[in-house]
Image (cartoon, rainbow, N blue to C red; front, side, top):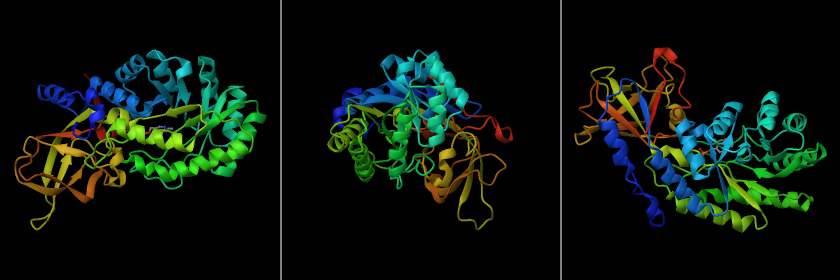
Length: 390
Ligand SMILES: *Cc1c(COP(=O)(O)O)cnc(C)c1O
């Protein structure tokens, strides 16, 4: 699991696969469980920190809001990007300073803006007129950055289209923010989650740099560039090591934004995914007919209990069983609920041992990001993903 670390990050490599594995092997679980290794989160923080140069790290809380993860990151000096009142409250409760928390959701309830402002939060995101008006009313004089839309995302899990505005509107919003008495400090964007190679950022950065320059030319004194997330996790396809990746991204930024005084990065997935493993169980192995080419393998975890990012087969997790030395064969992998959307991988079947059967344990690697948060309360009576932090 650590094979993709570059030599420059070697000092941060901890052999936590064996730590996680030893823990998991010594216990039985009666429901799908995410086991998170805090030391692995710490190693990843150091690896990203080493590559990100002068950029501030604002961990994107939504990737994994486990209390212990936030507390460890506070200890390490991380800052935070929160999307809601509850996420802000969590960071404050774990010891983060209000001045280290950005309220980065572009869609905020007015009363939550007022509450955040009262707590001392001073940095807000916006991508629309109404949002600026809400902020000006409920957090008068606050600092705001305008989120830019990324039209073509190179990420495996794009965040484009729903968020951000185009160049002309962004320039208008900077003017509006100033006229509303806000402090318009800069721009943000998100290249798309799980952007596997740093080089894939280049086209997006070119566009963003053009907009930045246009704002400067229009007389705006921009100081902040928030580059969002996108830092990848290893799911089987090649990725750059975290330090190398982060350093390449920052190098590309410095080349395109020579005058920016403050850079923020908001890694979520890249911070926590590889620190977690899900322990799941095979519920059933079957075929639909004697002539059926493919086995169906049903797990006790599915689309609604933590594996939401299998939607469109966008994120392809890696599975491991105790029988992996046996002959492998393709199967369609599905969750346990009575919903036909609860199929994880079918277009590209998954290879699992032919000998696999109900009751076998399945480990799902590098699942520390966007799993516990995507788990439904208890759809169909199947328990939500349990979380254990070690
Ligand atoms: C989700 C999110 C992130 C984290 O993205 P990753 O690709 O997981 O690193 C960062 N910034 C914002 C605004 C987000 O919504």
